[in-house]
Length: 111
Image (tube, rainbow, N blue to C red; front, side, top):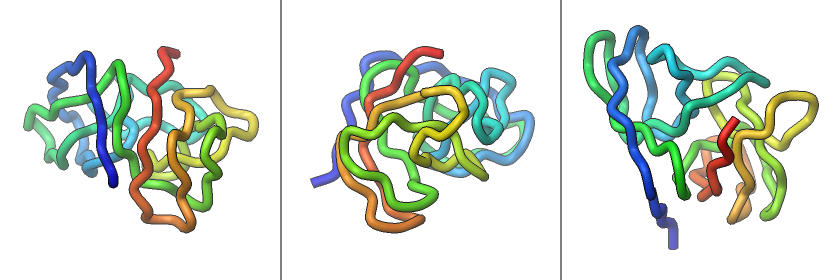
């Protein structure tokens, strides 16, 4: 069962296209690979649209590859979740992703 429990959401106006279930930066854009993230977009948005971003709690995010449960997560290409390598830890995997494109529940970490 895939779920998420968002404790705190912010409304962010998209300054570029944002895909649902991807990490978002504070400027209203998709977060940069290995960089900081404000949270995870609940839905897709085009420029000028408001999007709900889960900032605290858990969120469903698109995996950029296989992610074992319990792994530290960083932002990958296109705002996807990937296993932490050298980037900023933005979340902890609560479930397992088998392949890119899987939705995985993560515990968001302020960064």
